[in-house]
Image (cartoon, rainbow, N blue to C red; front, side, top):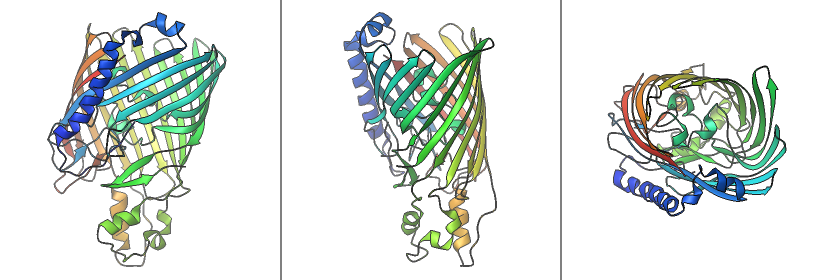
Amino acid sequence: MLFAITTRAYKPLSLWKPAFVSVMAGLSVCLANPCWSIDDSAASESARFSLHGFGTLGITRSNNENIQFVRDLSQPSGADTQWTAKVDSLLGIQANFRFSPSTEGVVQAVSRYHAGANFHPELTWAFLRHDFSSDFSLRGGRLGTEFFMLGDSRLVGYSNLSVRPPPDFYGTLVFSYIDGVDLSATLPVGTGLLKGKLFAGQSPERAPFALGISWDMQGSRLIGGYLDYQSGSWQTRLSHAQVRFAHETPTDTLLQSMGDPFSGLPYLSLVPEMAMTDQQAHFSSLGVVFDQGPLNIQFMLNQILHDSPAYADSKAGYLLAAYRLGAATPYLGVSRSFTDRASLPSSLIPGVDAITQSLVSQSYVDQHTYTLGGRWDLQKNLALKAQVDWVRGTPTSVFLFKNNLPGWDGNMTVFSVALDFVF
């Protein structure tokens, strides 16, 4: 995966070009080598080595020039009133090598716009998996994160009903992968299957903090797991994950860029309670999916709690329903996200409390989104989607967006078109 930081004066065509070239290059490779198709089961089962891929060619714009819409907080800038390809366009390549019937190596690289302000490919998966039995496996290496249900496949647009997973729910996830291990087991329970997974590791990533400033997440410890029960058309998952931050937020760098109001004095020396180092964030969620015949329904809830008052606690949820009509699948949804505004630490030094309030307010969100869209499966492994999102919130709801300017009133309409493919 990749990330990026730009100014408000970006040129949409210059951002379209790298995404278009990357995706079209992948398509050219795919067309020149049809044996790589993920549906060619005979070839993939007989060969020890296989190569697969996925991608999205998408364009997005909104009707509000005072703030930028992003897919998630790993993107430092996004879409305003000009069409841009950087929000959703991406290309992923995955190689699998089977060393034995029970041991496999997997490597995946993804090119997308995120915290590095470019489309440079990033190694998102690089692990060895060993199956001790059909129901018990261990993986080690670079692994995708699974904080919330369906979160591990949120970049594979073809596997998602909508253009993108609802940002109200998934937008806070800046952790895309970890370096560590996970252990999973499955056993029959009643009429279904119960699967459990535990994972632990460290983050190798950085995340956007402010325009041109990133927060070093490397070395932050992540642990968690889930219980998943699937029976017939129903699937239910309970998840929990914790992050212990290894580095402080670059608050002083931000304040210096704003005129250095404390004349070089470290902010945390004035308000030590706002520290993030060795503090934890707790991610809990419940997910339910019903998929039977033409009907698919998704219902998710989450809660994020922070030990430090530097970030506001939040809750979110969404409901998405789709109905297949041959090659066409119309869908509609609603999502909601909001933060709890707790009391903040105070200081006797004039001006410090106002700075503290301003910093924490950047994590506030209070909005709901209505989604209406359609998916057309043009042919096997190729789907075209069109979607409109109506965001309705308060002017203080800024956390899930980027680069807000005076005049933001909390309301936005987002238009998206995407072509998803797998090969």
